[in-house]
Each structure stands twice: as structure tokens, then as C-alpha cells.
Length: 197
Image (tube, rainbow, N blue to C red; front, side):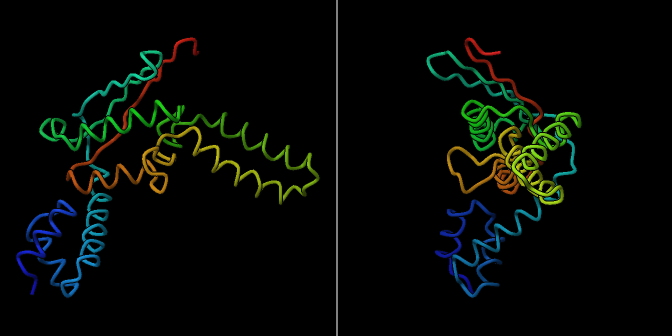
């Protein structure tokens, strides 16, 4: 049976509800670490279910850097204006704007990349491998591996988060969905830099 102190501690660590904390502790024999893992997995499962829900509210976050020599606008959507005004949602939008400023992605997700760009990159990587003397079937595998690195460079959701390189941006958003309780979508962004294109 979980104690009030354990429930309070777990709630402070995870921001989960009181009853969920109690259930997690009861199922994990009072082990705080295991209970936190159980809550996180439950939250990520709930986040996956929420991903199909419409997100038409939200905010546009502005971020400037280098004394005004670079600026980013990012539109982050959620389901309600109530959530859009919360500190957690605003912090997420700020972190996403910071990510765009520091990493300079070109697209939000893989699906946004035009097929012609993907085909040209695959062919370029394959021809480079063949030029190095690789057989065509090996060149295809090399090209596939290089495409994953390409996606990480140009797609916001595929990048490692600048504040914690153990977390992908997509996972950062999933964790936020689990905490916030609504679907969250990065709709679009733009990055301006003095002298840039």
C-alpha cells in the first residue's frame, strides 16, 4: 500500500495525477523508480492515441538570437486555447523555436520532403558509394543509412534536442502530449538570418 509521502514524491517527479501515482506505486510495490517508468509508459501510450485528434488552437512562438541577427517563428498547435496558455505548452513552443534557431532544419517531418528531393539524395549517395568501388546492392544499403542521417539534418522531428542530445524532438513532443493531455503538432516554422537566403 503506497504511503501519502510516496504518492506526493512521485507526483512531484512526474506531474501525474494523484490516483495514477497511487496505482503506479501499488502495482510496483512502492518502488518509486519503477512507478515512474510505469507512468511514463502509460503516458506515452495515451499520447499515441491522442495523435489522431485535431489540433487547431495553439501559439506562434517568436525567438531572436545573436542580437537580432537571427529570428525564428514557429507555429505549435494543440486542441484548446486553455492548453495553449499554459506554462508547459509555452515552454515547449520556446524549446522548439530554439531548436529551429540552432539546428536550422528545412522541414517539420520526413513526409514534408518532396519526393524529387528524396530520390535525388538517394541516387547521389548510391553513386558516391559506387564511385568508391562498392557493389550496387551494398551501395543501396549505404545510401539508406546516409538517408537516415540526411533526415536528422533536415527534419525538425528527427533531430536530437539541443538541450538534451539523448532525446529526439519527436520524443520531446510525445512527452509533452503525455503531460499536457492533448495532441500537439508543429504546423510550420520559418527561420530568418541576416544575409541568409
